[in-house]
Image (cartoon, rainbow, N blue to C red; front, side):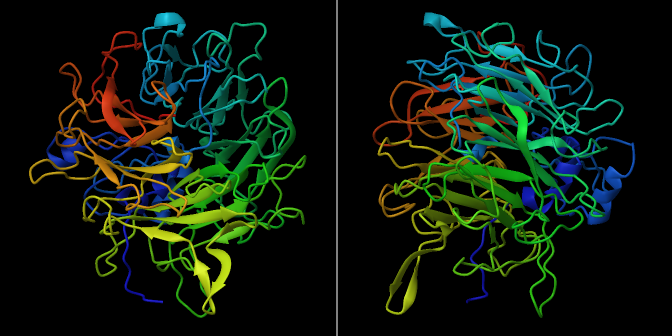
Length: 620
């Protein structure tokens, strides 16, 4: 294998571990002498990497939340653990009208005087697209907090309610329900233990007052029947993914507790799974998974943060969802070779009828471990690659099995220099045997390799790879933008500089699926910016177009549409208040017709623009 790497990755991932264990706003006005960038999206330009000792020390004291730490130069390092918008698993149709609804996390929202308590805004879809005003029978937009009537818990400083938001039907009534991560929620006197709120859907949308709908829930590792123990800094709810793991046609929820101590290994990480039932999520049959679970490859180590990223999809086409778990901070120790720090791995655990996720059943594929050193995976594992920083699923070749997209945003393409972070992503395709890097066919005595490796230097991909592009840091693979029955991939590049004078304006690249796999040639790839023809807005320095991407059908046609978060956009003179831009699908793919922009200055959207709000959190 050629050890000269053609690689692309994001600086986010380079400093990635700390956001899970550390969450402090990055004041780029101080760091760069320019307007403040969204803290969920941008990291310091200093190139300083947070050390393991820094991360460990953030958990071992009561000085602040478990994801907050300075890099030693007065610059907070904001991690990605609240952006789960790209997992591509479920459409959030909370009122059952056939159109997806958009949930927006606002982790910095002040609630009842409590700073950064967090909130979630929901805008409902319709035949005319997203409609914030509640016209034509569409529910009016909603604002949810832990102080909303019927929502368990209490809004508190630094809770970050709305960090990750995920939707799935957890009670089999045909309406999507909303899971809301509160990773820094205190459980009793135990700070930053974490929690997850569930609000259930109905014909009128999300509700806590309909007696025919399950009551809103709050889940922690202290809830009866949930495996694990409430501990300081576990950050239960940092990541989530939805899927039907036991094939009962009711949604189940996987929840990351990325700082979970396993045995003597601090911050090893764990994943809890709650299974859905007719009356909603239940602890009956709930599971906890670690890298020491029977049948799961690899082993528990301190500071791995297993569960930092998750995505669910049916990788073997048996009707049961399977779970991919990213551990981008995992060190590799190849036999006879030097340790590779933070190379990153991805575990895959398969679902089964009745039993749910299993690593020991003979009727489903065995649990897998993927790295950049796996057979037939292009490129090599290298220090600080952080393979698995982002995960997304979708059927990109139309064969009926989901495929797995794995982001490596810290990948270096130029002389393998650590810190260039141009970025890359891999695609591993699903088939009846599960995820496989080959088709199972031997041609000319050699396996037919199907796994793909993409960078901005790949033929047909718009733009060229540049230092700190972090290509692969924001991915969704759940949308069919041209209606051909095959899913497509959209990648947010909030660090992209589209001209010589405006840094970090941001861009989104779209690569279309086909029966011949993901291709930038069969259907030409697209690049979208705020300066693209027909797109509302103007590209400006530090806007961060593409900070989050989410793809569902919000209306106006049968194709999927793309929601793009722009956290650095000024609104009505308010700096960095942030907006969401929605690009609608068509028979020819994403197109500028009917383009929409939403902010907290949009009529019908609750609240008002706030400085540095950035619509800061995830979108789903």
